[in-house]
Image (cartoon, rainbow, N blue to C red):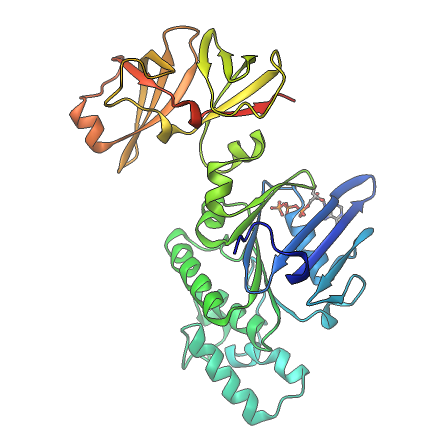
Length: 364
Ligand code: ATP
């Protein structure tokens, strides 16, 4: 099935025309979004774009000014958090410091008046699930940050909620722990099949974890799509810039499929049907620049000078300057290519920019 266009009758979580204002400031501007059962969706965007506000509205921790939210076919727009059937994990672990790990995990179960034996079994099962068996008697301070976050996850999942909400759960952890916990969360989510929404400002986290990414900016959704789709076909210049690396050129559409950028004429495969004469911003991923096995009449071939080389392990990011117009092109060259072609600073290279790799956006 095509995950990017869920049939409307299947949405597990449905957000319709949601608007949230803080005084004069509009934090969410008529957001609509459908999330399917079992999906892992990331809200991705820069600080202040409204992603936490949207998560809090889903949880009922903030109430929207306009719009509706339904969960599993039930309108929860004005329901209190306790009536919404979700578990939540925050950035700071937010465990009760004076309670043991087991008591932290069982918190929601006690509220639901589970029997003592059932609680004991369920806590053991959950601690096993998050890889912390036999740790129930410890206190939060006796655990590492990553372990505390796994306890928070166990607590959020204790009542088997229909929805798991994660608010930057990894951003307080150090890099190695973060990478491992990414995998563990994703594995656990798949195993349980729990519909999950995670807020993050980290594009790599979103690309590696999400089934679909919701890219937000200034209180609106810029694009919704699979990681591969958002990366390969960014809908706007903002998405192109925020997800992955791109070099950008300003210019205009001279004729259908014909660009003039920094005094260079280039062919593009998709001009988005813009009117010739339109001002455009054109983006290019560094890995799309061709330098090897160039066909002499390949389109968009030009001379560039190697202005800078940044060594990044598996590959090298070159800063190339065009001989005409002085446009800057970033290009990623593999270690093999660097060696075979003996690429060096100030060298002149012939490169080609495939027409289908030029992403054309109307300049606002
Ligand atoms: P961050 O990653 O920094 O948390 P975010 O995308 O999650 O960013 P939000 O926390 O949703 O952003 O905030 C969106 C905007 O709404 C921000 O400009 C913020 O200042 C504003 N805002 C959020 N909560 C409140 C509040 N309670 N009162 C006033 N303004 C608020």
